[in-house]
Structures are given as structure tokens and as C-alpha cells.
Length: 352
Image (cartoon, rainbow, N blue to C red; front, side, top):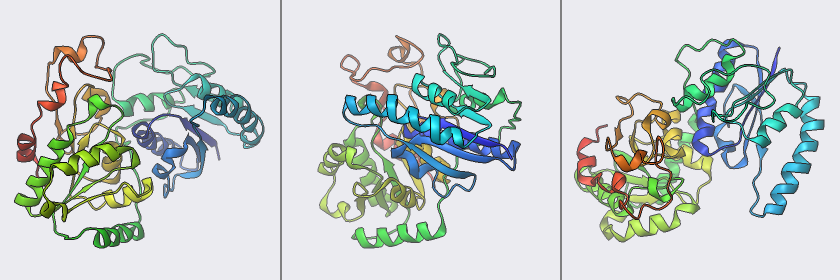
């Protein structure tokens, strides 16, 4: 029985996509013993995943000195002693960094694949060739490229999955009953946050969409939010009537796993291009994604029919400095890639 350590120290969406790699390993080696090493914030992604034996966590600290000591001393010792004693046969490192590649090397695994995406960077400490380095492709396929060097077969069915138990769904139903003043179907869930401001649809647009859903579809709306979305949810609520707020709820006090449980009850999810969108798809919810500055080719590796997108084509500002726009503040174009997606037009296209 071969032992695998799968590493990825990236954001939530990247971590959700990593589940497709775990599935691929299990398809190719049904007796695989798989551990994962991911950011501590995203542990919930792999909970209940029967393909994974152990979830090991990487912690980021707010203080640079703490991070330095943690990465350069504590983790090095942990990998040299604890992880090396695990005697992994394979170390698979998707979207590698200098830190994760070095940790992969320290495991002592004879078979190592450390995938640095940039064409200019070598795949440090790798023992195999990784194909199509630097080529613009879907995030799922790019992660799967990390295992191709081990002659694993990829049949196209590999797909991100987050597993929610029936008990967890029952918990979510009870949560909604306790915190929604009025409950009715269909249930729309919103993802109002994103990694940076230029990827965020205006909160007043989300408020208009929620209002249309409550008044015309006669359903309820839940914004799947965390504490970092506090300002966004406060701004959104300014634009909603008191009556409509009775059918509106946000989840800022919930843990990530609890938010996944609630999300599993959605009839439809609509949100910005964010990790939450990937989570909704991995849970099995129909989604609509509001794309702005980045490319759907890379960050929407899903069926457009099952998971439609709203996206304004051929904006010259989007590709002025590369294959997508990465600016933090769009003062010149007023974020038109998002603001020109009007809520009434979006609402007309939603179907359960």
C-alpha cells in the first residue's frame, strides 16, 4: 500500500479544487493511503472525505516574526522528524511555493512532484517531469498535471467534491428554522465576498437581486458570509426593506463547516468568483457566477450549462497587462466588468 502526502498552501478555492487530485489518486491506486497538508482555515473542505486519512494543517500568523519562526524552524523540524517517519512514497505538491516545495523534499518521499505554475520557475525538488508548464488552462487540469508524471490515468471525470452528511443537513435545516423569521422556498444563497474588491459585485446589486427573489419568487435568501464580509453585509442591508429582511439571513457567526452545511440546502447559489463558488459546486449545488476581472477559462473549470456565468466579453482593460486583470482598485474604468452586470438582467436569467 503506497503512502501519499498531498500539499497545497493556497486559498479556499484552490483547496476545494485539490479534492479532485485526491479522487484521481484513489482511482489510480485504490489502496492508496492519502494524507493532505493544507491551510488551517480550509480544514473543513476535507472533513468527511473518505479518501483522506489525515488532515495536517499549515497555520499563518499575523506577525511576520511568528511566521518566520514557524516556517523556518518549527515546520522544518516537524517535516524532518514527524513526516519523515511516516515514510511517504509520494509527495504531490500542487501550485507549489518555495516553502511547500522544500517541505515536500523534507518528507524523504522518493517520488516528488512540485508544480510551480510559472514558466520562469523550475519545479524545485521534483523527481518527475510535469507537462504543459506555463500553459493557460483550467485550474482542475493544472492540478491534475501534477500527477501525470507518475503515469496516472486521467479520464476527465475527476471533479471537486465536498461531502456533507445527512446529519449535517439536518443541523442546517434546524439552523434556518431558528434564525429565519419567515421560511419559504425556493432558497437562494449568495456569495457576496471575494479575494479582492475588484471581483465583488456591488452590495446594492445583491440587495436588489435578493429583493426580486423574495418578492417575485416568494422565497428566502441566505448570504453565506464570514466575519470578513461584515462591511459588505452591512451595506447590503441598507438597501433592503424591513419586511424583506424577515426572509433574509446571513451566516457571519458560523464556522466554515457550518456554512458548507447551510449551503448544501440551496436551490441556487449565485456569487462572485470566489472559493465559495467552488465549494457550492463541490457540494452539488447549481451555481451562477459573476465574473469580472479574471478568466473563466482558468477559474471556472465546470460546465457552463450546469453552472452558468455572467461575464462581459472582450473588455480591453481586462487584458491590458496580462491574460487577466489583477489590480486591487479600478479607479479608471469604475469596475465596469462587474457594475455593468445589472441585477434585473441577472435575475431574469436565474432558473432552478
